[in-house]
Image 1 (spheres, rainbow, N blue to C red):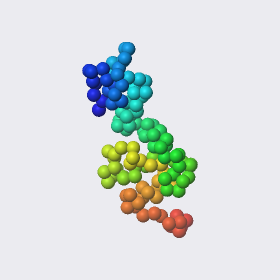
Image 2: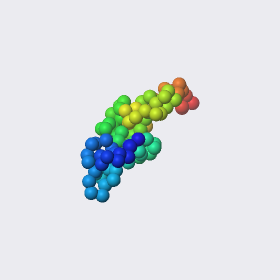
Image 3: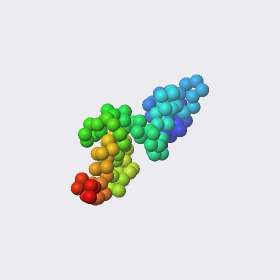
Image 4: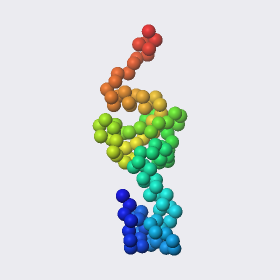
Length: 117
């Protein structure tokens, strides 16, 4: 993923020269970047939530609610969306997430009438 260059250049791809005692990353930012990329690829949910929340304004993509947000695959895993990058994730509130999940799996919504009887 990040090649270990032997030519004195940072392995993250920033092009900075290594200096001092640094052997792979030119700065602490380069190290943090590489570790964040690894955490995302490794499937660490906390990193997904952090970046998806950071770039999606902390609101539901459907209704705009800011409560009970969940990270959701735009293209469902069952349709090949599991190996996608962060662009395949969105924030949905609990209600919108339930509706989308039911639609993705072809499950019927229970009407209010069937819930009360």
